[in-house]
Image 1 (tube, rainbow, N blue to C red):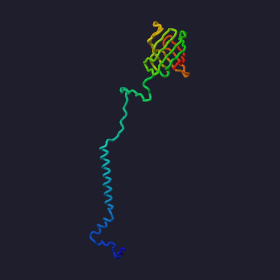
Image 2: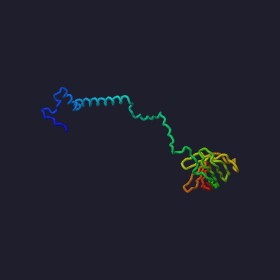
Image 3: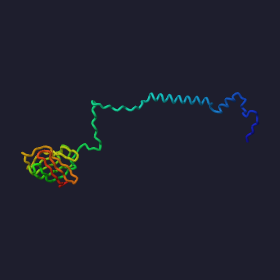
Image 4: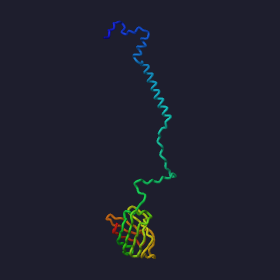
Length: 199
C-alpha cells in the first residue's frame, strides 16, 4: 500500500533541488516558442523544395498549333481503318442477261458475267452484245457510288473486229428491285435492264 505524502507548502519534493526547474520543463514538453520555431523551419523547407522542383522539372506547356498559310501544304488525309482501300464489283457479281436499245432505236440482247472480288483495273469477266456482234473481256474502270464502269477489250469468238472497239463507257447500276440498269456513254448511247440469271 502506498504511503500518503505529508502535506507541505510545496507538493513537489524535488522543488527545492537545483535541477527542479529543468525537470519541470522536461516533463511539460517543448515550449510554445520551440513549436513556433519548428513550424517556421518546416514551412521554409516546403517552400524551398517547391522552388527547387519548379526550376528543375520541365514545365508542361501546350505546343502552339501550326499556322497553315497558302505556302504551307496541307497534309493528305490518312485512310481510316474501317474504310476499305480496294473497291470491288462484288455488289454486281454474277451472270446477267437482258435487252437494251440504243439511240438509233436498235434493240439488242446483252449478257454480262462478273466474277467475285474483282478490283479496279482488273479483268472481271465478259460481256456480249448481239447486234454487232461483240464478245469481249471487261475490266473494272471506275466506281462512283453505285455506278460501276467497265472497259471492254480482248474481243473474241464471233466479234466483228471491224466494228468492236476497245474502251470504257459500259455502265451498270444495281437497282432496288435487284435488276441491273445498263447504259453507255459513247455513241450511239444505249440503255437497258438486265436480270441476274446466276450468282
